[in-house]
Image (cartoon, rainbow, N blue to C red; front, side):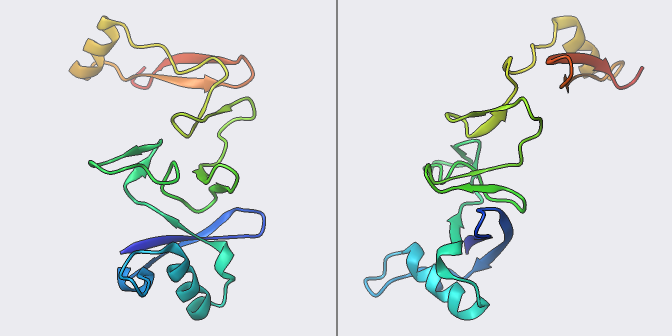
Length: 149
């Protein structure tokens, strides 16, 4: 199956449709996004340039198998299509977060949360604690919490 994101003129993903691969193959027998776009325009009354192919196998610019990542992320409703870089971006989680172009994901301005200490990791594994980090937008910090406390 081929997956296509239906986007608005403002590049927001409105929905995702699956179509049979046969509807994306050109006369030479090669998969061609434009063929799928024409099929979707004809059958869904939405302009062809607002149908963008996406891959269920891509997340954070990594392919889940042996293949090549396609367009950064599998599109989701509310995502944004970045036509300049041909990438799908999830919704920005916090005002301060910035685009990590390598991993095609939003990142805090101070990077990823710190690693758990060996003791915290051990406690999580033993299920005596449930340590986790949450982003504190006003403090611009990662706050450590124990959900079991």
